[in-house]
Length: 398
Image (cartoon, rainbow, N blue to C red):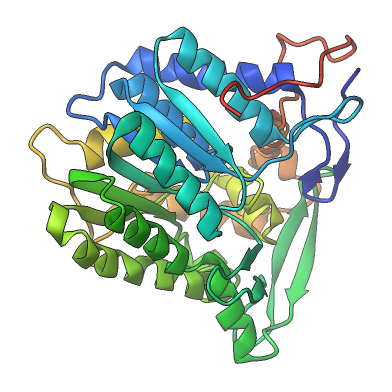
């Protein structure tokens, strides 16, 4: 079939198998060009492995340190006449590239919150790898069914205490407008968001893996978070999502204790603001990212997900001296370039100036759009999007 991008708001409803394959290959080539991650992981489980930081973590581990990888995700495969999700195509492309390079790569498709998928993963580790030495938790979902109670929770994206008003942008049209987001209705909104996006599921995974005896001595686990500038605090860090991230970060110390028997360590990595399916849904953030990209590209310090994950592995998790640099709260800060004072001062200045009329000149809204469509396999020069393509692509191990 011929596959073109179809969008609804911040969602792209279609994805292109050949374009997503180019995206994966580009990330692999970047890692290869940077050289080996010495002392890096060798047997890796990535939970939430199909898009964004998750797929980039899998690529960095596999092609940076030759790791065998198992990826867990929840994606829709293609059927005849209907494309699969971008994450499905990403995983298919990754597995094919890994196998061509002689690397072990298998995947499990299903609800990572469920006990069933946890057990399937444990069984696969026991069968094929024995143990794992790195667990990456990169799950992003708006809903979660609790595996013990069966209660279904939905997260909400709201400020707490009072309405939040500021600028935002429709990144498709470039129209800058004012937006007001009303605060939560009750504590239940916070609790539900924590239930979905907090640290409980990460803890459940590590407990189950530990009890099953599949964690190697000295195992590391890392989950991903975001802080960002004060500009976005009301809707992000001080809002419902921020409360969930606080819970995630607090869970690291709990997991650290769980892993004592195997001399393991648990960390939260605070990552840079990037164009992902999740970030595109948050009001204010697309405008901030567009301005941030402009400033960081001009300074020569811009990074995408693969640059972030390669640097996380090489310069933080697997340093040559074995020491992991953290902030006062014990977090890894791979957002250090974004949060540089000179960068934030310039973004703040541009934010005050941003209007529909000048946005193309003072921001990198074009780069934002490009990255957004690249996520779904579109806007790659190598691909003829007017040509027929085979939409039914299999993930080899599924």
